[in-house]
Image: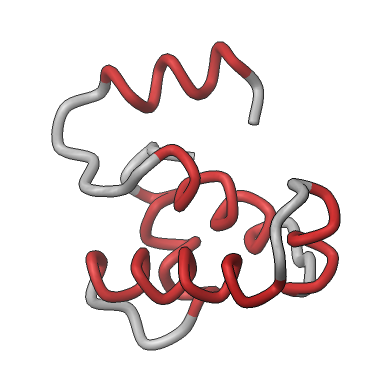
Length: 77
């Protein structure tokens, strides 16, 4: 994640997501598969799925794509 974007996101009030959750949602919004996300940010696919699951739970989203869209609409991505 771009450091300026990360700083903006982390200082914006109301965002329940961690920086890593936002990072994987940003990659999801770009259409990347879990394995591609994992490879690009040096995590295992299972860890990426855990971050996605956590973000989905926090945002009450049914899919990772819905979570990414909600985060985008809120201006967190």
